[in-house]
Structures are given as structure tokens and as C-alpha cells.
Image (cartoon, rainbow, N blue to C red; front, side):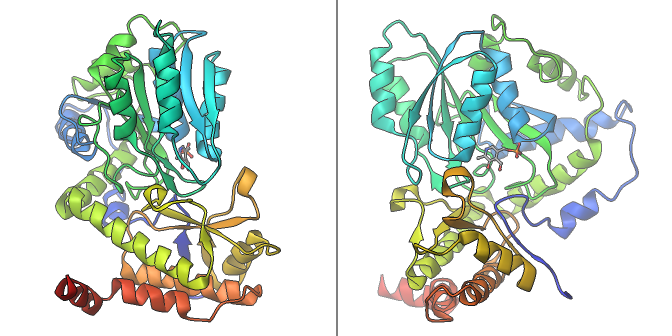
Length: 396
Ligand SMILES: Cc1ncc(COP(=O)(O)O)c(C=O)c1O
């Protein structure tokens, strides 16, 4: 079909031309004398995205899953206790990875559509007088259900109880799109990948690690090789890497970080909030439910839309793709067939969101979901139009 395909899965996201062009370069010598002049400022600027002064950034060839593995392998020992919660496919997979590493995971089972259960975290941490729990896991944005959790809330609990556990955050579908504050929230390891908020191809695991986590690594006994922070830190300090870096992707990352910082992080977050609001307005107008069960869980990067009883969400996804070249995200595991997901993160603007909503209406109409054609698009227009903005400001 002529025209652009619509990519509205929650990662990989749309890649800006500037990022693509930045990677259209000859391959380079990563041991060249001037390579550090490129690498060192890049690390300094990636730190700004994590909103950290004291954290140390690590960039591995890999993806978010590799980032999870690095967090665990660098800080923990076999049999260590970890507190986590499962409320979607990604929070589940992180727990699974910990179990494969021989950790004892206390994984609180939460209804999908909700997020990190602060009360239950508090109760378990309070009961842990011996401080057996060595790490607490938080999936900041559960991409499978479109649920954002309260990382600062978990930090408050740890501080209230003076519990020394490390705080690990999966920010794969939040960092660079939704407000994330490494230092203010006392996060020890934040994990993300290149293919979501950073608007890049998959291929980099991007992490930020606290001094406390690095310290924990000196006595941690899990085996680590490829992902050893100590080797990375030693070479990175000189502007190099312990093995061949994905230099072309680093060129793309340079452009991506420039774009994010030029827009300004508060504006990036506000743009995501505004676009997400339009998608949520459309879902309401269609008479459908957001999988996230309450507004404080609503994600500004992805919305999982529940289809009516008796409808297969996969039919919407297939029709969108086959008939209209529109990629929507599928329901994973427990919510397979029950939800389709609209990704609204990264290089995204009003008219792209209108395209996604229009295409979704076409597909929903084709599979026989009952709604007034145009009602979701209309609700989004009212939410996004500048005239609407001016009227809202005047009314306030
Ligand atoms: C929240 C979350 N965590 C982890 C992952 C796994 O990351 P990757 O696919 O980059 O390995 C994903 C992937 O979509 C994710 O959305």
C-alpha cells in the first residue's frame, strides 16, 4: 500500500529522520584517539535524561532484558531475597529472570490493570526485620497493560522503614517519555532500552546505577561476564568500552538525546501526557474500557484498550494491519485477545495520534464493534485542538 505504515506499537517507536541520518555514517574506529571526545559528553548528557547527578550511566549492546540481567548479576548473590510484584507480562518476565539466577523472589500477584501494591510492599518490608530482602523491583510502566506505578512511593516506604534494600526500576517504556527521577527517588538501578522513548532501533541496554549499587557489586557473587559493570566503568572512564561498542547506535543516541534535551524534558513529558489524554478520551467515547483500572495508574506512553465481551482483540489488530497498514500492540499472556494496545510514545505528535485513532476506528468498524464512527476521533480533536486549549484556559 502506498504511504507510510502506521507504527503504534509501544516499541519499537517511530524513528526521527534526524536520528536515522545520524546513523548513516561510515563505520568508525572505536579505539581512535578522538573517540572519547564523542563518548564522554554523550554519557554526561544521557545522565540528564535519567535526571541524575550522582548516578553512573552504562550502555551495553543489548535490550531491556539484558539491562534487567545486568542489574541482578552485578549486585546480588545466589539465594538472595528479592521483593517484586507481577501485574503484566513484563513485570512477570523480570521475576522469571531473577528466578533463573537462583534468587528467592517474593512476587506479589496483583490483578492486571493495577500497579505496584504499595501497602503490600510496606507490609513485607516492615516484617523483614533482618533485612533479608536485598532488592525491591518496580516496573515503572507495565507496557502490557498500560499501567504506571509510583516509584517515589516505594522509595518513601524504604526510607520510612530505614530498609537498606536496593531499589531497581524497569523504566523501559517510561524513561525519556514519562517523568523519571533517578536521584530524587533514590533509585539504585534504572533500566531502559533504545527502542522506546529514545526513538532508536533496538540494540542498546541503557542503565543508570547508583554508587550504593556499585558498592554492592564488590561483594555480590552471581557470575557476570559480558555485563560486568566493573569492566565497563574502567574503560568508560577513559571514553572507551571493554569490547566493541555499537558505535553506530551511539551516533543515533547522540541525536536522540540532543532532540530530547532541545525540546526540554518537562515538555517531552507534557507532550506525552497531552497525547495520551487524547487516546483516553477516544477510548471513553468508544464506550470501551482502559485496562488500567484507575486514573492514577493511566500510562502516558501506552493504552491497553479492552474490547467488548465476545470480540477478539486480535481481529482488530489483524484487520488494522492487513487492511490499513496500521500496527497496534497485541494483548500478551493473560490479556491476549482481550486488549489491543495503542503505543503513543517517542517521536509522536497530534496528527500521528489522530492517524492511529482513525485507523483504529476503521478496524473496529470492520470487525463489528458497535460505536458511532468518528466519536473517538472527535473526542481526540476536542482534547487536542489549540482552540480547545484556549477555551479551557479562558474557562479556568
Ligand atoms: C516494561 C518493559 N520491560 C522490559 C521489556 C523488555 O525489553 P526488551 O524487549 O528491550 O528486551 C519491555 C519490552 O517491551 C518492556 O516493555
